[in-house]
Image 1 (cartoon, rainbow, N blue to C red):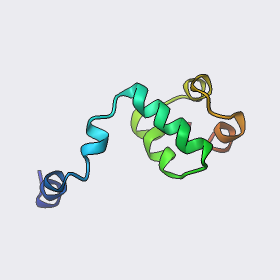
Image 2 (cartoon, one colour):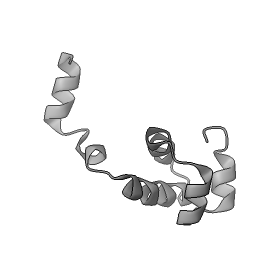
Image 3 (tube, helix red, strand yellow):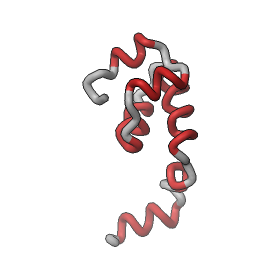
Length: 71
């Protein structure tokens, strides 16, 4: 592990995602999608969430349709 990665772990930058389950990530991604926040893209690609999962969780069809290029 490189120096920069060790420093970021010590600072706790990645603590939020290390404690995130797939279900929590799905809920968080839906919240961010409905707000049209670009941070949702990172969570979706990190966990490999599908359009069906997002729609079942409550994301709007328009929001999912807007991100079809990453799904």
